[in-house]
Image (cartoon, rainbow, N blue to C red; front, top):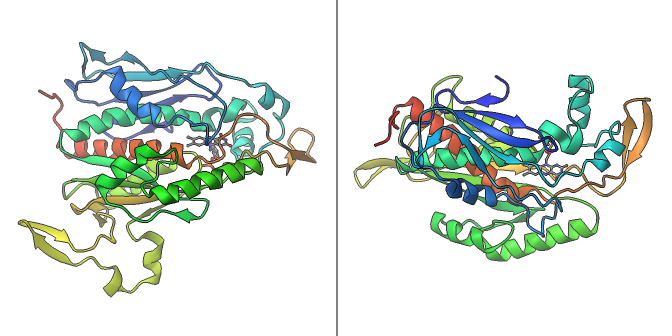
Length: 362
Ligand SMILES: Cc1cc2nc3c(=O)[nH]c(=O)nc-3n(C[C@H](O)[C@H](O)[C@H](O)COP(=O)(O)O)c2cc1C
C-alpha cells in the first residue's frame, strides 16, 4: 500500500515522469457528486510552470477522466484520472544515468531498486506525479465544499524574502495576480527577481508555502497514531522537495513561554473559539474548530546548472555533474496547488471517516 493514502476516501498514485502517463485512482468517493473535466483542469492548471520558473517542458496536461463518473456525476465506483506525458525528452538522463544528482533521489532509487527504476526525469520521484495529486485534490475540495470547508495555500517565503501576513480574502485574490502565488504583492516582485537571479547564476532557490483550511468542525483526528496533524504531515511529505512541516507557531513555539504560546478560550457568537491560533487549529491531534494553518518548507531544486561533485555508481569513481535537462529554478509557486490538494485529500478522508459527508449525495 506504499502508493496509497487514506482510509475511506483513498487515493492510489501511479505513473512516472517519462513513462506514458501520471495518474490517480480515487476509491471511496461518494456517489452523486457533480464532476466535470473543467473543474479538475482548472486546479491542475494552477500547478503548471510559468516562464519565470522556467522548466521548458511544455506539457499540455490535459486531464482525462477514465472511470467512476456517469452523466456528470460520480457513481461510487473507483475514479481513474490521468494526464498523458507527451513532451518527453530523456536524452540527458540517458547520458548521466550512473551519475546521481546531488540532492535528488537518483542515488537512493538506484540502490533500493537495483538499477531497475525508471531513472528518466526522476521517474517515480519526479514532481510530475503531483499533477495527479492535484486532480484528486480537486475532487476532495468539491466534497469539502458540501460542508463549507475551504482550503487555500499561498507562498510566504522565497529565497529568504518573506511576505507580510494577509487575511484569507486578500490572499485568495492576490495570489492570482503574480506568478509566485504570493499575497503580498511587493514581496512577490522581490521573489520573482530572486528567481530570475538564481536562474542567471545557474542555481536554484527554495521557500515556504502556507496552507489554511477554514470552517473545519471540532473533532476531526484521532489520538494517538491517526492524529490530524500527523496525517496531514504525511500527505504533505509526499510532495517531492518538502523538507519541513509545521503547524501554527510550529518550531517557534520551542522558544516561547506557555503564557505566550497558549491560545486563550473565549465565546464569540455563541461559539467557543481561541483568541490566538498558535495551535494551528489542532489540539491533541484533533481539530479545535479554528483555522488549520500549516507551513511547508520546500528546498531549492536539486537539479542545477552549476557543476557539482558526484560519483559514477558503476565504476565507483569520483566524477562531476552539470545537470542539463529541463528543470524548475524554484519549485515553490508550483507546490502551492499541490499543498492545497494534499490538505484537501486528507481533510476529505477525515470528514468521510467522521460521517460528515454521506455515501450518496442528493
Ligand atoms: C511541482 C514540482 C516540480 C519539481 N521539479 C523539479 C525539477 O524540475 N528538478 C528537480 O531536480 N527537482 C524537482 N522537484 C523536486 C524533486 O522531485 C525532489 O527533490 C526529488 O524527488 C528528491 O526528493 P526530496 O527532495 O523530497 O528528498 C519538483 C517537485 C515538485 C513538487
